[in-house]
Image 1 (spheres, one colour):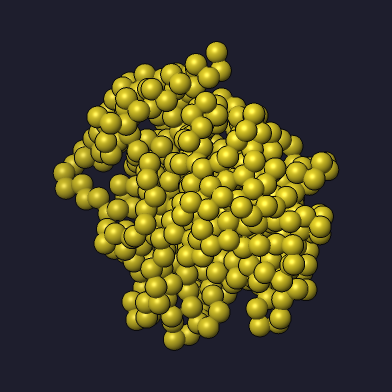
Image 2 (cartoon, one colour; image 1 turned 135 degrees about the horizontal axis):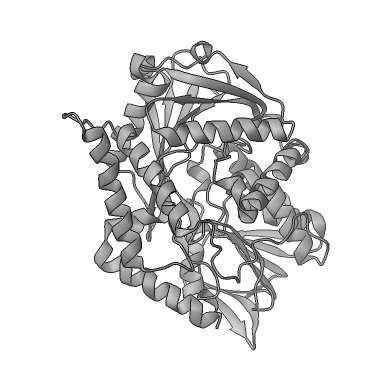
Length: 483
């Protein structure tokens, strides 16, 4: 049996950042980071890694205390990145260092729906209210943006302090730095279950039967966290359940790099918006889809491939049809049943969670890793503990608000997928069809205390016969857990 002071289960951006923060907090700590080298189903390897604090703002986000708390975390995370990378790069050779490609241009077009306009205005209002540097641009003069005529952008906003990093390079850099630490061990394996004795964690068991011992364990396994929690049903039902936000992206090689900055739409159609990012060596990253499901997406589908390529060539740059495909990428964002993260200690002594971060995990990893490391070493944290793991699911919408927001997403999704309305009057019946669908979904769920966020409706819609009873039973279990 291998013995350590702290086990970090998960070797994505959050797990690695936490392990590094712990080693800096106390260089004498014996730390093990456990995760398969290939990171199957993980979000970090496939991430566009946009440092999207304001670019991720939506109209509903800032209407609730939980949403404002998530935004506040993003604002603080954005401030930490330059110094955090400087510290990381000081331990890396020049050719392996990680740098921010600065600047993000958010644009809106008419390919989606009204939700795109609402979210663009929300971004614009947020940067004005909070004094974030920004500049309105001529949307038809954005370098690298050469869409089809019917997808021309209407507005564009430049955010000079946002941008992107190369996710693969970041993971390699963090891994190399941890490998250099004499007190850190990287374990190529997957945690299957926790060992708990008399209410406190004592270690973990791996899928190959190996046992690792430690008095403190961090579960930062992304979508893999739920299977570990399910081995402890009494604890699991007190923690908002984690689902999978499967995403497909691609990497292209272009003859000449025309993108100077990130270009992206606001969030829309249940996803993080269409985006293209400049990469080194004349490469362009393009993403992404967001398919919510109960199980991880392990391979991309022809439908997702077609959709991403169609959006790219219509809405970003028609000339990219001559680019060369480098690779397709698939990952899974950890999405809780209330879409809010799980950060902090649990009632099992020594067990900590850092997951459920949806689209913010890599971006907030410098902040959340340092916060959790400080808390584990009995120091004050860096953020308010608004998202402790053991809680009732947070209600971000009334039933009426959820229906209205979901309708906007569904309609946007229809337009983005190129729906054709051949008869006069169908433009009115199209939204009515989705409204009836949503009304029936929420009616079958029969839930008013814990209103399912619009993003998770796709899980129910895809398999009503199974998922309606699943969610009804889940919320009944939540009520019993908190009775």
